[in-house]
Length: 178
Image (cartoon, rainbow, N blue to C red):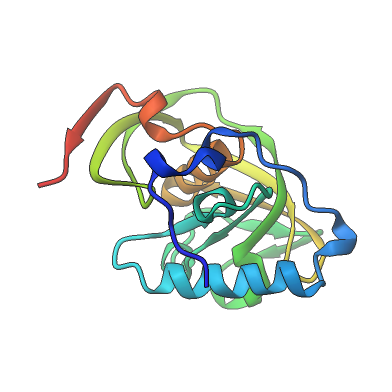
């Protein structure tokens, strides 16, 4: 079983993660990683997403908790079909494999942010309000998802993990959690 490794003991968090070969997505190794990451994230009281580097795996993969998907503020697109709410997403759309940023809004605002790999701290990080990602789901199907608000914030945080960057590297202010 995987566990979230604290940033001080996890050199993988400081590496650019490797792409997952699309042909490997249906294989047991990747499917087990996804299953265990979901279980790990579900066990966290405050976690909304988890990237593979946080569990020591240098792979371009992250998952988003269903809590974060409950009330998306923007219409998302999967292929050419507009999806208006979470119920229209299959469980696979909470998995982002080999994600790339397709589009970002220009302006940034400071957002409160924490991380399961940096316990006991939080910071104020400049993030854009809107982001669109292209990725593969756990079935190996390519999709595109637009987001604003919290989900856009989550996408940017998780993409940073895949690039070897932690929120504490970008935070304008870091405070102890009280």
